[in-house]
Length: 282
Image (cartoon, rainbow, N blue to C red; front, side, top):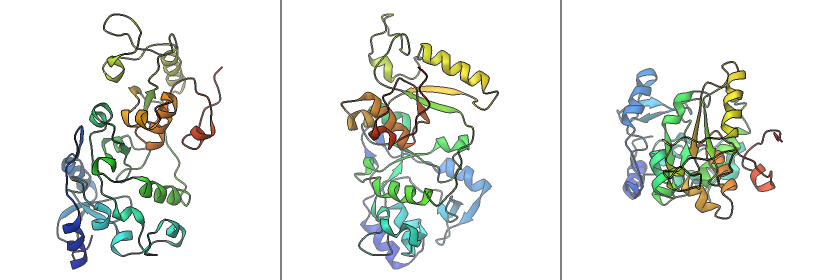
């Protein structure tokens, strides 16, 4: 965030790549500019910027390429300070969190989960979690050859200190990569219901009793649920859990790229650590 010599050294050391093929970094300057129109600020370097949820200013070019963006702009990294509650996630330096040393960038969620096995995460950095607009920003560490785990550990620790209540939003729902006719399926190009490439094509609708049930749930919610959009499970999570497409779907929930999954799940200890479950329907 500062303009000192230390920052310039870090910036020189950071490998500014554009991400992995199939999950390239994208420029979100237009999105950040629109945010800056509501919450404008000027960075210490004199750049036009926007206030993030942490209350500090980042430039509208934030997240464009694979860089140590947190090292460059996050006061926790810049000032080498952490709250005492979060020190468990510091590096060998007691005042520097490990996530400061990880590169990341903004990416196109739909392209990455269709064309690559890179892990994609939803960002609520500029929006509250009950603001539907927050789904316009997604990021990836793995496309920059880094790991998101340090940041996720930091966020989990921080969340335990907050009272963030999820409001009513439109639901983005993943369906596991295993058709269960008549509960959920897609009709393929031959008119059958055997799973094929149509699974990854979001323009082909899911059908079945689960969709009917969710439609009724949306109707009786009296506006609490405004819309439901169904999608496939990301290839990244399927690669991570090759033995279970159901666990892969739950991984997408944990990663924040979907709100929930609709299917008949076994409730296992592994899955309970990643997401909450509704009362069984049958």
